[in-house]
Length: 362
Image 1 (cartoon, rainbow, N blue to C red):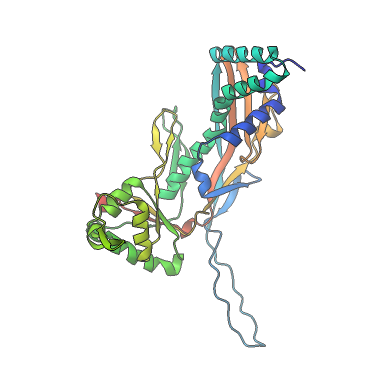
Image 2 (cartoon, rainbow, N blue to C red; image 1 turned 90 degrees about the horizontal axis):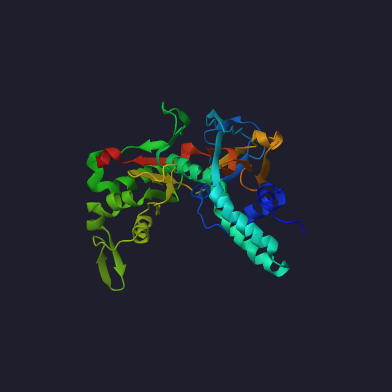
């Protein structure tokens, strides 16, 4: 059997593919945007996107036996031009870490056939996080972008090291936005009931309302109307919901009982490039959704798939939106790089309703 080397670990496509498969199969990291859609390929980087690609099915016409059938034209929902975004980072494995890896490689080569399996697991566990970073960073960026779009209808990404703060991504969706006045704060539950009833003929039945934990505490269970009006039966006793024991499920049961959508609390965070935790779902916003299936992550095949650089080994990760992993070595260590071209495309953003509570909470 050929002796294992560090170069083989990073340059042999079969070995790299095996490590990537292990990471994908065993990682516990949640990818939040995938709750709301899946990948879909686009053949061109710039493409036409429809701002609402699905309409409700209208009732059919009742006609006489020999009458001519009326023509039902599809409504124009509006369209725009969008472009996939480039994503990419380089993850360093420094020389000190490579030296530790070399010790494991030497141990693998010195082991007999029975011992190689255990040492191989040690090697994979050692480089696991390096590949995990490369495989997940694009997903984590899209977690932030999709979370911002869902809660505000807008998303911006700035180039971190650009002194001019140039916007690299700027998306705005045509949500229907409602801005409650400060005067409705004491009757916010009743206000939402009225809004949902008025919206249903045009937007359909909402399955859920998503909000941050802070919004839930401040505007739902913290509402004087909620605590003074609604009660829950617990056995033979009536439990006043003004107590601090209210869960989101209890509040959701109350809401669905009075015709409001179920509540889904979002309290997810992603670590940004500065090491700070970013709250994905904004406070002071409530978004009404008819279902979770609201977007497609459009992906385009990166240029280097067809025109690879000669000094690189590339691995195209299956099922991950043409995510491309490569590596290169210099005097300071090795670098695992990823690149991909993704953009979230919302299927029917004109059917999503957002409540902006900033004015009410001011």
